[in-house]
Image (cartoon, rainbow, N blue to C red; front, side, top):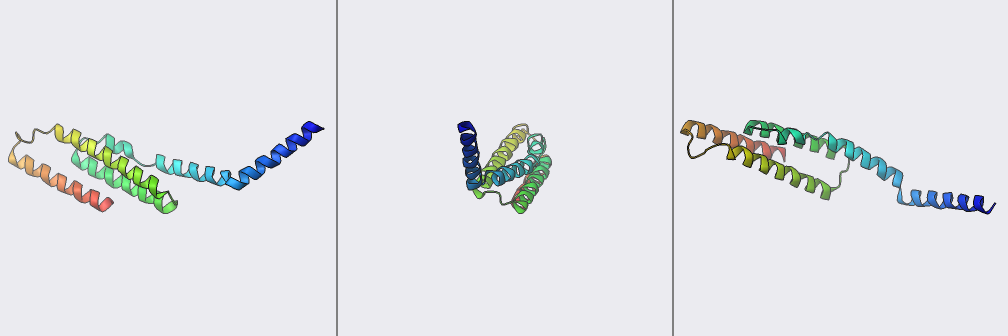
Amino acid sequence: MVFAILSQTNQLIKFRFDSDIEIDTKLKLAKEFNKCLKEIPLKTLIDSTTINQVAESIKKIFAALKRVSKVHSYPLIRAIDLGACVARDFDEQLKKIISEQPLLRIEYQKYRNLQKEFLLLEKAWKEAI
């Protein structure tokens, strides 16, 4: 009898606690955010080997981020951190691509083509943001 009363009281306290902090709605929202974030194609940026591929992956990543922000009210602080992570990966990938190019030894025409690709990449980055 005492055990039944205590277990019933415990269930009542747990119900009140869960409803007070709205854990069900927050857990559902977190699962939706997780699902949306998994759809962001970060692997395309990491696997890029040319400047044009980096530009295309940046466009895809920011399009996915805009979709997430429109569908859900993603926290601003987390969105800024995510943008910083994308920028860091972008920077690392560009360093890797540039280090493979002997800029001082290539022909002038190839250098101009690289310069044009970088200008297009800069434009894609600015448009995406």
